[in-house]
Length: 224
Image (tube, rainbow, N blue to C red; front, side):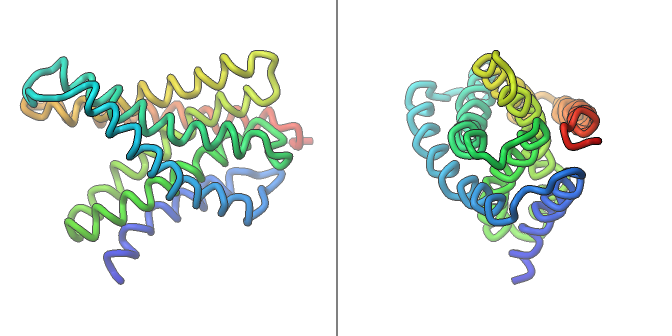
């Protein structure tokens, strides 16, 4: 039970943080929960299917090849995972009437992403123990949230723009680039010091995410 709580706690902290950042019109709890569940189960399933295909197409045989680790990080992992979250936000959340201001893009992208992160974190922590849970609480889980905020920022703008397709895809691209950069520096750990690159990309992502949150708050149609 304690391991389960350790795995879920950082996810809940982030969910509450984003929920209370939605200052002007809270989203329905039930709809948020449905997005969370889709993130936990549908996006994990989609990720499993797509990553299986991507692994076959982009077979990694040399774990000390920078190029192969680059492909693994940006395509096999980052693009597959972010696309799995993206299609749920795009076809389930973004089309719903409750998605009625740009900030909602951030809210729903984070909910889907935290569903994904919750199930992933539970599996990792139950398998590897307390140390893994503590480490991931300050790395992988915030990283998933950061990528979601960046994607949601553009998908929130997309809902109310004539350039919906471009902005949606831009959200997917930005999330994939930050996710890929984060993983790439972790994957090339055979080069001393590269872990610094992972933390640097995460900190830049967090900085931009905070700016994205503030910008959508200020531009909210309910901010009267």
